[in-house]
Structure formats: C-alpha cells, structure tokens
Image 1 (cartoon, each protein chain N blue to C red):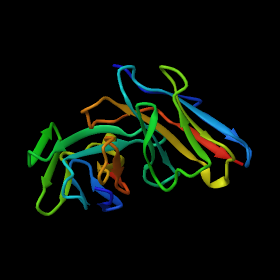
Image 2: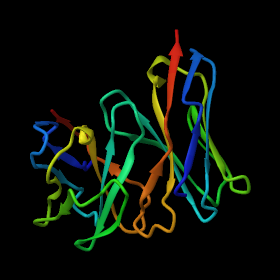
Image 3: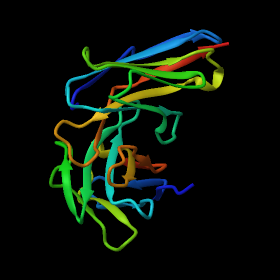
Image 4: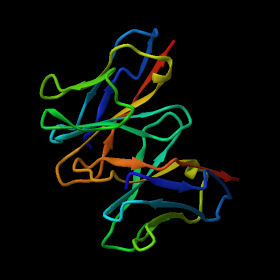
Length: 113
Length: 114
C-alpha cells in the first residue's frame, strides 16, 4: 500500500536555527497538509496546500512557517527561526480530490534546544 | 466543524468490557467523521469513519454512531483487548473548509486492564 514518507524521523536544532522538514506524499494525491502534535496533546492543523498554493492555514502557521512543493514529489515545511515551543512531532498528510480520508506520514520529531 | 469536543480524556476498562468515547462538533454542515488510533510515538491511524448519510457503522469489534441532530458521534469498542490500549482521536471537517482539512478532538487515552 502506498505511504506518505517523512524525513528525517528526528531533528534536533538550536533555537533560532532554520529547519526544513520533508515529506513525500502519495503519488496521485493533490491535497497536502502539515499537522503538529506537542507531546501529550492533540494533533493540530497547521496548513493545507493545493494547486501549488496554501489553501488554509491556522493561527499557529505564522510568518516563521512556510511550505513549498519544490518538485513533483516533495512537500516541505520550513521554520525560519525555531523557538523552544516549536518542539513537537510534525505530521505530513495527503489525500486525493473528493476523498476526505487523510493519509498520515510517520512524523518528524523536532526538538529545539 | 472547527470545534470538536471529546470526552473522556482518559478511560480505563477491564479487558473484555466495552469502551465508549464521545465527541461533539459545532458545524451542522459537517458530513464526515473519522476516528484515529495513535500508539505511542506513532502516526494517527484511521480505524473507522462514518458519513452523515448513515447513523451507524460497524467493523468487527469497533462501531461508530452518529446523531446529526444532536451533533455528536461516538466510538464503541467491544470485547476490549490489551492491544486496544492507545490514544483515540475523533475528528471532523474544518469549518467552511474546501480542502478536506480535518480538526481533531483532544484525544482519549484508553487503558485496558488485564
């Protein structure tokens, strides 16, 4: 069965540094998402992306965050200047048009020191 | 809808007994309600979902019921087993969302006592 893949599985960075989290959505999917989950809390929506632009974003997704689909397969989340509170598990997800079912990647655990 | 309330936050049941987790949503236009199971350190896994044209759906020991009038839906797990221990999240579409966005509830940590 096709899967959403994410790299790296763990990322440790210093406060103020830039990080890029990478995702490869399922190949025929056209909607892409980033969610985050702070340890012990719920899964929170960050952003959705369709047709090479952001469809929706949450209040969490401020100017420090950006997303990009640099080629036909990757979907990235960039945090420009990380803060301690950005430490969380970041999940990428994708789906195809007309399908409400989201397929999640295995996540990137980001630790900001 | 945009606001999804879930309870209880923790639930402990004896192995073999049933577990029920309840969620409410705010957007009456919502029409898709998935349930996810998340084991420690893993991704959320879809276990069952229901659409608003049905009131109940079953898959072996798992069932979901939907009451559109009251805007709530529930997950029922019967004959619970140790491997059912996990965090369960309900979800519903985002308010006015055109991008299949889903909003998660706050989660229920289910523990099965041997």
